[in-house]
Image 1 (cartoon, rainbow over the protein chains, first blue to last red):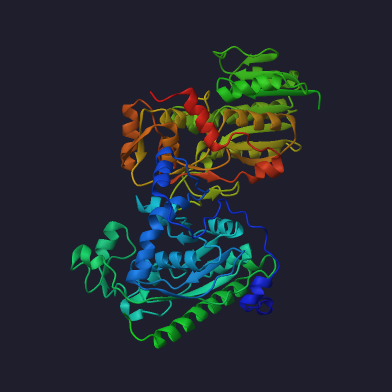
Image 2 (spheres, helix red, strand yellow):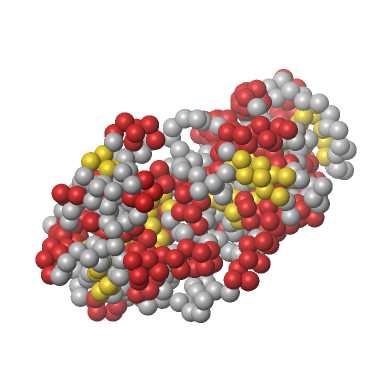
Length: 304
Length: 310
């Protein structure tokens, strides 16, 4: 009777739970403190004297170059409201809905996690292999702490106490047409649940409202996508009609909600092999996100 | 264990040469015999005996049998690690392994086999995990020759019961003394790098390579072990630290750009320079009981001090 083995608890339960295995983060965490010193930063760049972890994550670069502009967009353009919280002192898997044609939702979730997390963790996102094939993008992805969406990398990150971001809908989610907004796509075969079970970390359902309208995708150019090796080439009311201007996302008003953690450490060893259990948890996480999305979309005063 | 007789190959290489000297100085090793197809250019240390024989020759079988060789150390670099690798040397590598193992089979009495392999067996690519453990050898093509060498050694170990097999997958060797493809590449005055990519690299100092091979030759520690220095550097970081100038060019142009400076860059190395490769060395620390003394950045510093920018 596998369903009886996992009991989702209140957040208090996760905090009270016996400490998971000691976290061994490869790098000293920088609290969300004063603005980084630009001269120091440049000196480190010129001498190559800065730490990176085994995934190629460069915290200094992320904090100095990537996060400030993202935070400005977060505050000024999308005016994101963050609700809910994240558990401290443990690795965690943040599972969110994916949308918007261009992955702004991932970037904004990274800012939200960094700001909301009690230890100001960097969100370590799992990306498709396409990301690591494209020049420049591959470099930035690795530097910002992303890695390939594969079991080995994900378990490794989670076991070392990192907060990992997963978008199980993948390209089906981010590239879905505008009419399907706020309708979650299939969650794959629940691979993310098996990973969380193996690493024994809580799953945090995360619902993002606002990203689904930034680039209303009304069509796509299949031959062009095939030519460029992309999963889709979007057509929105403004793109490619207005060229680069059309690539600017609409300034919708966002909310990001981190839900109650779903515990996975009570299932016992070998639970990640239990397909029924894995699919059961995957469905529950999906339902939680869908319900939260429906409620939030109905309650918001308007898109902008 | 005081009667250990060790036969090793690959002394023409710096790691093999240093290993021969260390084994000769080790009191638990009774005899050190070096097998080479032709006499090595460098002088051999004292107490090291030399057999000039092709792998697989009757003479080698005779020596293995009459000297009572118990430990065979296959310390020649896998072709991918040589300064100028190529398809021909890969085939040669595999055939030489087959012959050497056939000699051991015929002679009998070999109880311990130590094989030097390379982390190149993991390949490098956009759909590979960021960190490789020993189990993460990709199933599909292309299969590097080093993997075939490992498999032959495994087949030999299973077919002769009681044989312990230790395989070391060495990361990119780098130090002031050793000559490797990557070492030559990093010594270029202007280094062509892959535009838009910054690979994660790990280096291994030759002293650590010698130390693990030595320990495996004198202890029964079977298994496959990744060997790499602590820490990870990005290629751009390594070049900054080395005081080299990076010249980003499109991936396809890297081999050509390196050829202008007469430093061949193999397709495998180009992939490494684009996508990077990091291996997990926890098994080496826990099961094998060795922690590398030189970190990745220390090995790089040693290399840079020996070869200042031209």
